[in-house]
Length: 613
Image (cartoon, rainbow, N blue to C red):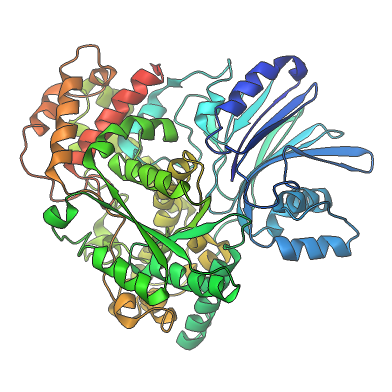
């Protein structure tokens, strides 16, 4: 994986603007600690930071290829999982290759198929190609949105980058936030509406979209979307196809010239990936798979079961590791590290995020990076197969908002009266919810319950899952670790999308169809154990530490947070002795995480010198 940035300008000579692009490039060092590259012409400049995973010598970027009378220059962040098939197809068309990198295959795919090349790709990617003769910039992003890409218009051009911090180094892009940005931050946050870059004038290229920019202007086009159609496979056929797709996906994502490991929680998803990976690596003669798990000091003492987290993972980790014969590594995080890392997590995301849930992944990734360059994770199976509690709540048809943000009323109380009047939080949330529902590709003839379930899956795939993918990318890449997510393979997503609910819910179990498909891959007790989310700390020391930090902010009249909140209401929360009974966001974010989120908002406003306009 890598970091990319670039600038196209129709009036300035960009050969004279190298200092700006160099600074943008260096801000992405964490994404590509191994080497950097740059390419400049009068009208375009592309820069790159590289994390070497495949073909160290042959995958250098920016990659330049001459074809006919034209020159193409590409910068790329991602990984292709069908490189071999594409190389063979392109070779039959007469193309030759200088190395074995997916970067070269990707650039030649663009030369051959142009903008339609995206339809041939299986992978996670964000890349840019400058067509020198045509004076055209092409930007695109993978179907699911695993890899990030942001852009903004300048006075006479366009600037793009993997991360917001890089864009903010351009002199024409300021850290400003307007009414809509405030609503994203304090109503939708820690999530984001697809396409929003939080900062004024900054946009995110949406998943499954591409963009072309010429002197005639900018055009965005959606190249991929979910299609609803009747599922015609029997239960047995569905189970067999799922199993084949899953195993094929995991094996494809093990390709690497660098050491690779898996993240293992002991739950269904990570255990299945680790089991397939362990067998595949041993069959290829690579020896034992290394697996990693994370936990927190004191969790064995303070853990309390609830509907979102029914049991602890630690015993299951040992059991699965022994079963698949992996070399397991435990990472135990100190609670003070979680507090101290809140600021660093803001820098990784470039805006407030999921508080200690982010920090723990950053610390976890930092430990893994000491020994590995690539890891494989079980993220996103719950969104695709229906693993969340909100799929099973009886009142689900009555929930007229995003099910992970059901405490909006309580959140609004935390805001200042002036801000409430300005951003109209209930209206903003309702509009974003309606927007999402309007996109759902409903299937004619479906009953009310099936249609509602389809809506829920769409909301999870397009509004909730991006929050987790953002977290995974920013926290891991901030340490220079590449994390792959097999459950985001678009073939798997497309197939599961149309499996009817009664089949997905086979046996009346969450992710029942996946459990059945994994029979023989995992022991039955692991296949059938209840779902657990990513672990969080239950230690009261964390609650106390975040409360004390928040109190310091509340008692400092220069704190920028005070402009946005109702100080008295927030102050009253710090006097509570018990946690919320329902998360204010997602599954894990309760009162300590609310304190931490407000801390992160203050850090962000202060350290990024954000101007509210």
